[in-house]
Image (cartoon, rainbow, N blue to C red):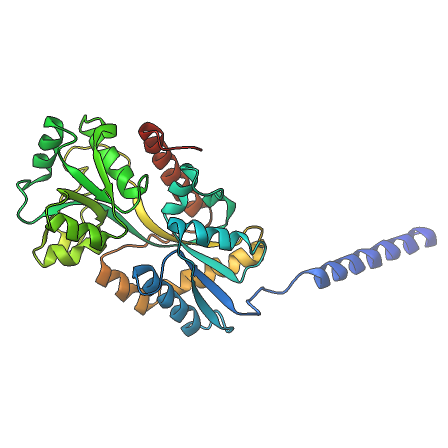
Length: 333
């Protein structure tokens, strides 16, 4: 028989444990959901490709009922994405702000153009991946990528390449390809244009001899017979209209692959529950038919990366980019 004092102690500790459990249960927060308007922040002006992507995101989040509060697309252009990143940084710990970022978030920080690293913000989803392509006018004497390389080896400064950002992903891709081909990347002639459309016009007018930019964005003039795509910096050939374009790897240039990606980031210091909500909502939205149709039309892919896998992918992109920018003398970080 249990002594009375010992029995009373057992009952006391059992009741205390039950009280602690109940209190802990009551303290657990319910599943987080947006309770005020959500902003999708864009680094570009209205009307461009990023604007189209953001408004499609807006639609898919609303159609899936993942977000029941209003969703606004906020165009914060300027500083080649620096303005939009700074705007997100102003809303610390507020999960109602999302940034549709490009790979420039890495190159800006590496070059000292922005104090904010991609690591400062939680990466929530990878929207899609595009790759840089090497293009020349359709009447160019360079019929193949081998012809272009031969011209560069003869005189690296004889061929002017257009990019939309010095030290950006396309510039880094040119340097990677040049290095793999045994050419001094520092001697290459790089001309910066505000947009790929301006670069295409300049190239067709004979002001520059080649361009490196988004393969998906360059497909229309290639299909129209205005440009010739010589190679693409992708891990494998693209389907559809670009199926005949060889990859740098196929051409024997063993080099790390840099992508022109789009990813969704949240504000710094949001909670694990808020991160989990956005990861799930975005993953579900990116499986929708409207999004799949858009990707197919624009010939881009979207590896289903999130969490640790997404962070590992971004880290590899950061390390590969940093290596190139250090070589070019453009890295400040």
